[in-house]
Length: 564
Ligand code: SRM
Ligand code: SF4
Image (cartoon, rainbow, N blue to C red; front, side, top):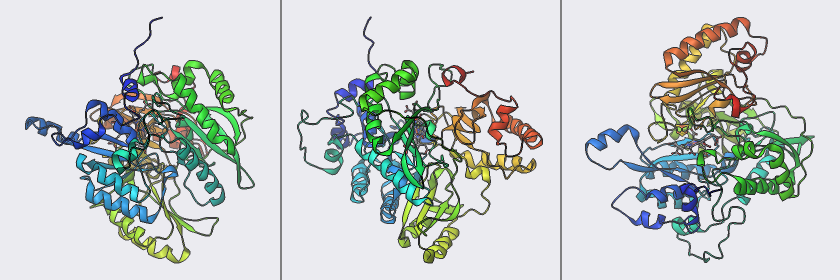
């Protein structure tokens, strides 16, 4: 059998001297705001992407100018927790070193900066480093930011789950000193021969790898959409172990039946102290078995589909020496955040703020960036970013509640009119920064949700939260294939329209209408909401209703069913 040629990125990784490439030379080059093509792949491992403002592309081209290159940098913040002091620094960096003047909370509990000129990258990374923050492995073919339920009202269990999420993140970091050398001016201490990557090797993983820790009944982290998920199992309020799921992912390509979103398979239960070794074994199986020829088929979900779950599971157990036990009963509930104040077991108070599409910015609608800054100046607890792009002001003393609430209110951080559906819905970044966007998402979200809210009101179903998710393309950054109503960008103003995922995130949706515009979507929703109001069963969610009544069929096997 003839050897298949590996994907270009595989050669780039092998030849990169453990992720150094010619990034330093690219940084020193003043004639262009860009990095070389090869380095554009390697900088992702350092946490940033080269972008250009797509709103300005044509104008720049007409003026015969190079695209206005800038960089998007994503920090690595396991479980989304940072201190007020860190937040103040994050905020100051956004104002002084980026042209977007904003901070973007992401669907994986961290933050991004947009519009960083090349000349500011090093200062920015050093600014983060001074606050013990970094961006290594926030992107690239490695284990990404590890998510963990941030709701601190179940403090003991949450803390235990978070501790493991943090450990998973720390233990699975790349070992290369490239980040420290290039960005933090650390001496090159090791020769390349000495610099080993015990888990990754010099070819790293075939593709990105994502992990999440869920604390039931909350499923805010959308655990089944991850490559590897740990669902906390507790006894008497203490963590005893995890149900493990593997092989989830959202990314797909329109019309390409070899690619599809998939929810993770349930593997079984392991003791809490085994989770790191188990994760390492899953990652090394993916490292060795994953597809290094076709990057579109390189995620763990395809490795599991191609080898079969039994073979995969046996290999992981054999490599780790950890025997999977029977799956424990857990109830998976809600994916939304709890807005407003909640008192924790620790007698501290926690305030969850809705941040539309995670965009922390001062606008005519609200001075969100200033508001969070003012809170950070007086807050004694911590900040927690959620997987729904929101922010929790956590661990507030009862005595400080009133002042924090007043600042939040004065700056538009507390929305009186927040509907149940808006509070459960998210959108990806898309235009103008995302080079892969085919349609608007973040900028379209407020208007679209206004229309959905109006239709829900019309049919008297406003109390029912419906999980709506919009993305500008089928890569699925806002996990749209796990939404009760999913819009996935196809072309400007046109979306594939999906229905039928479960409210809890345990069932994928299915395409209902292809390549349709807003008028069609709203006409359909008007009818569907009418049917739901008239025929929905007590406590029946909208997603379940669309499947029960046959409006869409449930997806039972993503590989076969998704493209319908
Ligand atoms: Fe994503 C690529 C933004 C979560 C699947 N994602 C991108 C890029 C970097 C575009 C690019 O490659 O040039 C986007 C940058 C836009 C911008 O201008 O900021 C981007 N992804 C995001 C964020 C910021 C969306 C958001 O609105 O919050 C999320 C950052 C998460 C983080 O903090 O790490 C984000 N991306 C996700 C998720 C959701 C999740 O992980 O829970 C997914 C689906 C789950 C999955 O991985 O399958 C996701 N992003 C992708 C993919 C498809 C991967 C695939 O397997 O096919 C791409 C494209 C790629 O990797 O080639 C992508
Ligand atoms: Fe960009 Fe597509 Fe991800 Fe949206 S889903 S941020 S358009 S890659």
